[in-house]
Amino acid sequence: MRLYSKTETWLANLPYIIMVCTGAAVLVLGGKNQTWAWAAAGVYVLYGIAGALWTMIFICPYCAYYGTRGCPCGYGMLATKLVEKAQHECFAEKFRKHIPVIVPLWFIPALAGGWMLWRQFDATLAILLGIFVVDAFVILPFFSRRHGCSECPQKESCPWMGKS
Image 1 (cartoon, rainbow, N blue to C red):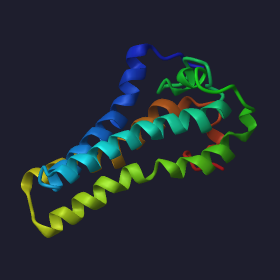
Image 2 (image 1 turned 60 degrees about the vertical axis):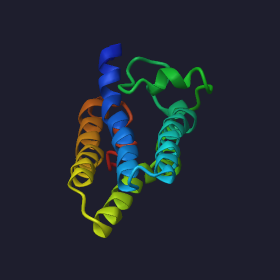
Image 3 (image 1 turned 90 degrees about the vertical axis):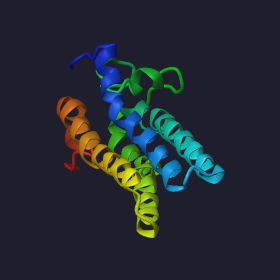
Image 4 (image 1 turned 180 degrees about the horizontal axis):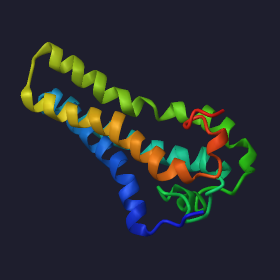
């Protein structure tokens, strides 16, 4: 198992952080900087944080990386402060059950931004939405699969890698 440095862990989280930040910016800009748009963006950021915590609490305890620096995103180490380790044989089942909780993070800004652009085109919003889409649907999955999944001891049974 490869051990990740703090810098590598931070870099592994960067695409998710960018996704949440650009998603919030899409909501603010698409909502023309109105109060409700800022509120929606704030809720979206909180949802992004809650999604990471949800993963740590309900998926990480079942992962072989739990409590080790072998977890590229560092969630495995953080999870030890929140929950006890569980049997890793249940990982695929828990992953499949709990990952849908965070999936809307990928679609809320994309759908809202697309709808807002359809109603009234704005070049800045289009560029920001493009950055969000490329990060959320290309960069983040690419680095997740290449950086963490390729070395994962549970990749054969992981729904994300598509082998189970």
